[in-house]
Length: 333
Image 1 (cartoon, rainbow, N blue to C red):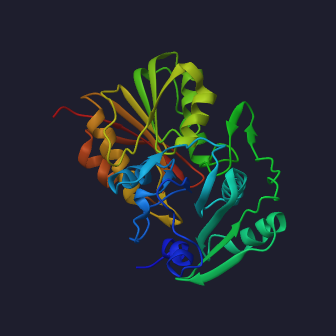
Image 2 (tube, rainbow, N blue to C red; image 1 turned 90 degrees about the vertical axis):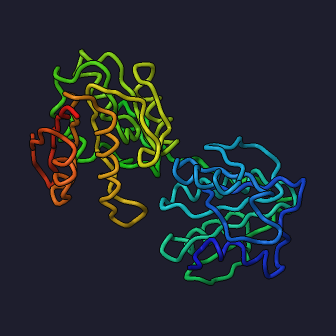
Image 3 (tube, rainbow, N blue to C red; image 1 turned 120 degrees about the vertical axis):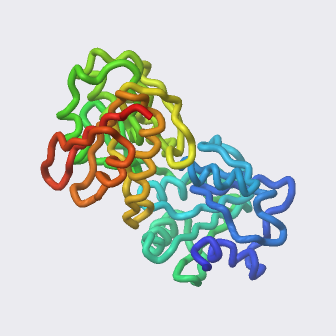
């Protein structure tokens, strides 16, 4: 089914904009695999994608991709795919525009629920008139940077939550969520040895564990979002070991004595409880007999069915404000 990625390439297919050529420098920000074209774009562009599963999909499709591409390159063109977060989109538009060489083209596309029209207005106030087209319930807009046009001055928003570094677009960017706070209340000296934080985000739970559990010998943080993992490293520092990992497809480096997690249950805007189940299954594989999982989830998510099938003992340790904390102990095989 066609979507905003098809809309992104329409200006090229219609001949309004020239396709990238061999030897030119093109970048896709918040990249995703694109529809097949002639010439094939995967051979002519570099990609930036910090979400691990999307990064792996791009690599499998033959794209050249990195979690973060260097800034300051003189780009012939930059394609920007919409993120869910306004500040991330603004930052990507600014970066794309400022890295264009004279004559370079910036193209942005997003579906009509992504705030694409306000972004179009926001960019036009800074660079002048934009061209656009709509199709597939999406909008693409673009601009060519002339030789006399200046960089966009922009101060990226950063959020400090007490002693923590957080930035827009990360999960719970305004501070620890209710579930994580409830889970952290359970941290005590029982947590020991080699411990993993699955879906570590920007490192709140890991920091709380290290502050409260002095029997932890090694703490490993697993996170699929590269930017969040960089924030976690800034927040937790040398006390942790960091893994950019998609736990739904990539195995963690167990075994662990304890695994702690506040698993995701959304993919985009849609609730996807299977994500949490995948985290539980990954934890079960990484724990030996006697190893323990401590997790928090919304009370209406039926994770107990999965837990009871994989663990010897499952008990609810706390419940408040729509969340439950569950401890599960692995049995012998």
